[in-house]
Amino acid sequence: MGRVRRFCFEWTYGNDRKEVLFARSINVAIVVNTLFMAMRHFGQPAVLSSVLDVSELLFALIFTMEAVVKLIAVRRHYFVDHWNRFDLFVVIASNAGLMTRYAAGVEGIGGVATVARVFRLSRIIRLMRQAKSLRSLIITLLMTLPHLVNISSLLILLYFIYAVLGMQLFSKVEFGEHLNSQANFRTFGQSMLAMVRCSTGEFWNGLMHDLSTTSEHCEANPLFSKTTCGFNTFDGCTPLRGCGSPVAALLFFVSFVVLVGTYTYSFALLGTSALCSHSSRRLAPPLSPPFPSIRVFEFVYLRDH
Image 1: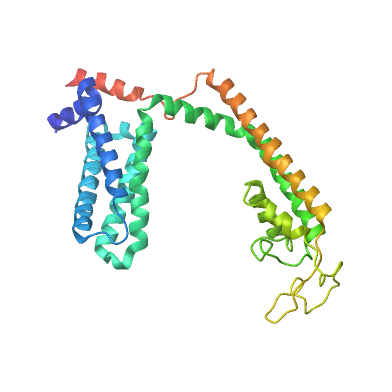
Image 2 (image 1 turned 90 degrees about the horizontal axis):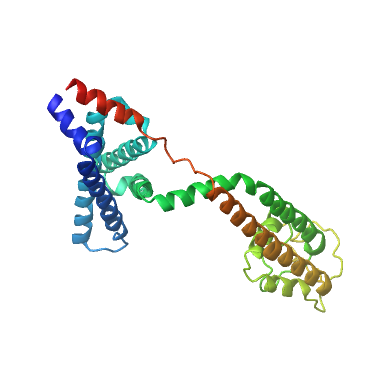
């Protein structure tokens, strides 16, 4: 057992050249596995399905052997590294999904197969461990997230104010081409969704046009009625035919787009850039702590053997 453990240790942590070769081989396997998963599509030929199923089992065996080799090499020290714990979790989840799928049948356990593929796809995150520049960028972004709470609170406050204001101004306006059951101001929830939609720039001028329209048969201020759709919606209800307001719609949407779509997002972008620039000057901590116990283990292991 000592020779097997020494062999596993040299290929994973002990020998720099072998360790690099082993790590690069696993990275290549991750990339190829991801490419094979991207080849799966609806209506694919039976030959391709067979090839992908075999490759799925082959890569599962490769990643399982990687985890086993590292466990044999360093035993309990394996769990010191956060990446190792992540790898082991993905291996266990992927293998559990494969065993469940093949035990219950592909047709009867399609949801589990999908979840298993998601776990296998998450292995691509491991490549970030070798990409130092990408890792530093992600760490810097994570460090700036707590500082964006104030800007996010301001956005939510503006959404809330304009949603309530929209209900007060446009809740009785009759539906048109763009003002419909999916985008309206008749309830608070629909108003919030409409504001979020407008903040993305998705045809907010269409809503503004419908809310500005006045027709001959519209009512200036419809009164409450149990048979009106806007107050009590049911099959056969009388449509709500309130009139729009060109001035109110213009001021409402233009001010919202300027405040939320221009200034607020610009301030958020500038604030994030400034925070990233400030954070990049600091020494960012690694995503996982260094692995000193491995080097200590190496010293003790080679001394005793």
